[in-house]
Amino acid sequence: MKNRLKVLRAEHDMTQQQLADALGVSRQTINAIEKGKFDPSLPLAFKMSYLFNRSIERIFEYEESAS
View 1 (cartoon, rainbow, N blue to C red):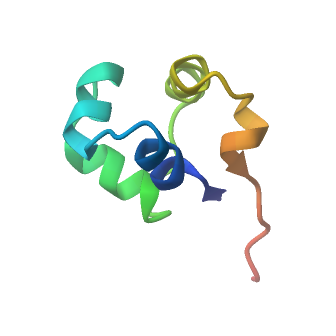
View 2 (tube, helix red, strand yellow):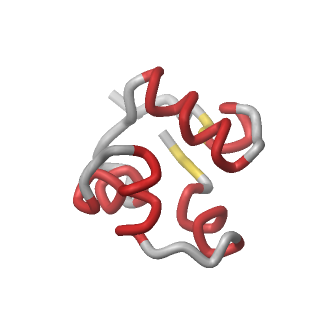
């Protein structure tokens, strides 16, 4: 899943640790999400949506994997 988390974090002048603290997760979780190695849970995606005042669809974009 593609995401704009790194861009949004930069626009809000936040470090990965500051975002992690605001969302109640580890910095490693934020790093993994930004790199596309981990997809957040729905509750976490809603927290991000609320924090950045964006719809989930404006933060995350589904992409089908080639199998």
